[in-house]
Image (cartoon, rainbow, N blue to C red):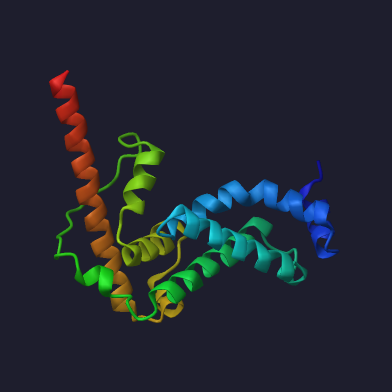
Length: 187
């Protein structure tokens, strides 16, 4: 098995074995990330493939000064955003307007209360526009100003949609808790 530096060097030389090693090493992790930004597994797979093509064709641009995985994730996230823009065009606000205003209380998620799969499933149930902003802010760590630039919206829109996404997620998690309690009470 090649180490990461050997894989990078091989990919820069366009060696198929190195490219396959890179894909095998990161495909499942990156598919999970792509799925957070997509409507379906098929969309996530398209994003993953497109991102890997970009990574492999631009690998000579990697300066080897920062995290290689971080460099690749940035390409993946940007690819997901581009994919979203193409598929949604000017319907960015469509998801938001279809949901009634929800108020959010101070709500902290207890990581012991929900499994990772339950949290990811709840996030994936967010309307697409909410999901994009929630992922960029809460998971990827982008600032609202950066999100606004990436999505070509204003900063206030990013903040309000993030707040609404959190509220929507809070409702979903409370429903999950209530279902659990009901199941336990029935036993």
